[in-house]
Amino acid sequence: MDLGFLNYVYWGVITVVSLGCLIASGIMLSRTRSRPAILATVAFGLFFLQSLGWILRIAWLDGFIRNRLMGDQTFGPWAINACCCGLLQVIGFVCLIVAIWQALADRAESV
Image 1 (cartoon, rainbow, N blue to C red):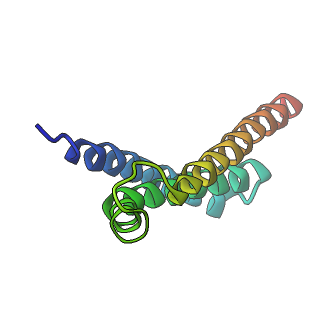
Image 2 (cartoon, rainbow, N blue to C red):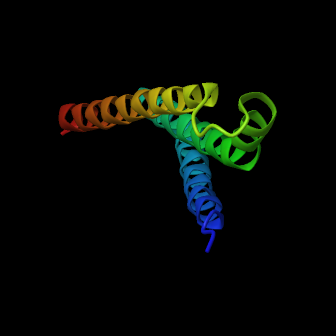
């Protein structure tokens, strides 16, 4: 039983959630123009790009490279995508942490 479609379902849900968060942070950015809003928009934009990259990878890139360039091996140069997407996640999480920190600091100053 091949459960490969579950990868598409998983990354599809992640993509939709990331897009929703990107839209919400974009609305917040258009209203406030604050640094936390900018950082949140950057973070969710990176998460959205990362999830699109994973969908493209599992839909097309893995099979293409395995069939055309590597033969029947289960590893290959496409593993760089995991490194790149991991880096995008780290940058996105750092942006979110800094955004929350700055938003809380701004709120504490205004009280």
